[in-house]
Length: 285
Ligand SMILES: CC(C)(COP(=O)(O)OP(=O)(O)OC[C@H]1O[C@@H](n2cnc3c(N)ncnc32)[C@H](O)[C@@H]1OP(=O)(O)O)[C@@H](O)C(=O)NCCC(=O)NCCS
Image 1 (cartoon, protein in one colour):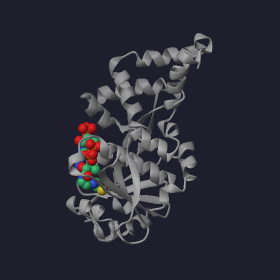
Image 2 (image 1 turned 30 degrees about the vertical axis):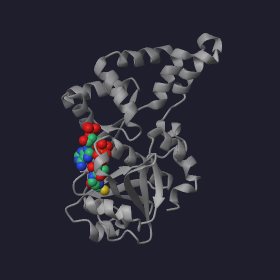
Image 3 (image 1 turned 120 degrees about the vertical axis):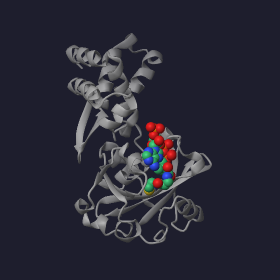
């Protein structure tokens, strides 16, 4: 990185709100956040936040992409890593005792690259997704308790997982693949584990998994949790605009009420996702 670029980046970060926004987006990961959600978290007006987002965008520290009617902002991990590298370049004549910790941080890059295998991602989130059959009794009980559909669990093409933290089951989740797109389904966090950020992490794991399975977009139907998924970059769409294969799924065509919202999100593809495609363990449910 050139000194001029480094000065521009540090200049943009040298302001409390902007520093907090960048930290928030770094934590949010490649799925990013909607401008409205950032404003809400920061307790600031959308116009005020928009000013700061523009400054960070101009400095090349964050990026934006339009999804339906929303703009999603995400951290530019490469630029942030370059900034750390700029500070640490040639440090202490390369003494590894001093350099290694900083070099490790700078080498992280995009967190999806950092967690380059399923096992690494699971370790990073301290959650595991364990394949189970649709006939699993605990899965059925949890879905029924959350008023989620159980009619088609044993049918072909469904993949279900126990979401575990150590030896504890904290919930369940699943997906179906339809013509290159994924339909996420059956996500439930058991009641005594809700409100601790685990649903958020479990959804990211599921998204990573369907991305690794080759899906281009994720879809889901929900009657009560649309805002939860919108925080993760999903956007509501009109059913008429969804792919036919998704509309013809049992979930969309007959099981979920017509009033259920349909949401979608493009999936991040990249080196980490393609590396993970090589793993056999994702789709053996
Ligand atoms: C939706 C569900 C998976 C969320 O799990 P969770 O572990 O409680 O969620 P988290 O703790 O990760 O919540 C993250 C954020 O989303 C918010 N959130 C959680 N559930 C929400 C909902 N139903 N609507 C709106 N926001 C919600 C939380 O308040 C939290 O916000 P904060 O970070 O500002 O505090 C869980 O409530 C659940 O199992 N619900 C029943 C089944 C269901 O509706 N599944 C989804 C359809 S398949």
